[in-house]
Image (cartoon, rainbow, N blue to C red; front, top):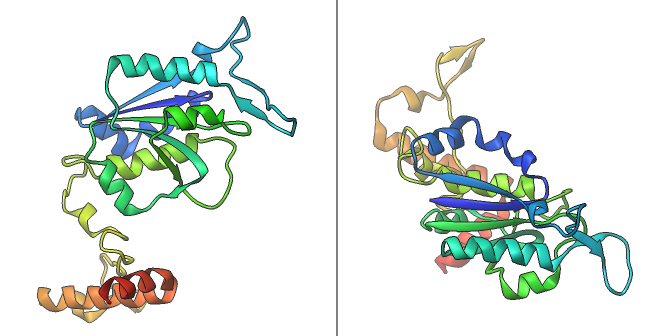
Length: 231
């Protein structure tokens, strides 16, 4: 998989992809993340990429010209399955979206900045808009890093234990159950006896019950979705 990212601050994205799982995914040749500095397409000697918005109002807007030039250049090099704009008013990122995008070959991400991007880019290029939550960041770079991480770890071969991603929170619509490791007794704090019993069918039953209980307690909205789906 290849993911291209357009940003006015590409340096913000270097560190997240040079460590841990994302670094290993790229070293294995399973994921390629390519950063593009929008200022390379800027106008004039100052490489301008933003301007005042028509109609007045506070905040600068990313200009249509530099963005369209960058996108069209990249489109000449390859076909993109999705062109994604990271924006607070996009659809909320959920595990099902990451699952879907992990099956694609080429993705192009646009990081917003300032007051946003010229609407014509959204109308003529963007095929998908994603938000990582109901809050505003200084730019779309951190949101892009979150999205790439959530997608990249799902690519077969990226994780050492390929089954582990299948049991993450939200994969089956509920939160993950509590987990424990050695020692079984620490300061008198004991691991639930069922987990050391060796009775794996019972252990899986316990885990499922715990997951449902935790979801009902912490994310009742998810339980509402499950109940509606079962009706």
